Amino acid sequence: MSSAPAGKHAGPGATSNKPAVAEPTYAERARTLAYLGRIGSLSTLSRKQPGFPFGSVMPYGLDSHGRPIFLVSTMAMHTQNVQADPRSSLLVTQPDATGDPLGASRVTVLGIALPVPEPEVAEARKLYLARYANSKHWVDFEDFSFYRRTWWTLLRGWLGSDGLGFGLGICPRAARPAG
Image (cartoon, one colour):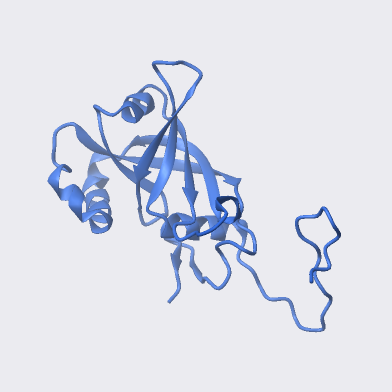
């Protein structure tokens, strides 16, 4: 039985003489969740309905710095929105979660989505196709291009003890779980 008082989400836990176990930081948990995830919800600012968000299901890969890479078509509304205003958010949820979705790990990040610079497209293509091999059928279509989130502001979601982050080693460069 928990020692947390009624009405509290979590308590301090029982005292012990054992040394505290180091836990990943929220940033490490968020990077790990982004690495393990494959699909997020990309929200852009609607150009057709100014002031309103526009959500899209978005497969993504990560570059060597842990930044999301998207393969998008100019025909897609989210691409047109990002071209008009690059501010967007990406919601990533725990991919293997079962049960209550509000108990699963999740994180929302804000940032700017811009085209991948030409000298870096070959690497973005390689990384993305390694994750989504079926994209080889349309990656070279003229209307498709790679976009990358250029910076992130972390809006913490639930990354707590019942969620992702415990028992995972973090590689800071690309947020790959150890193993």
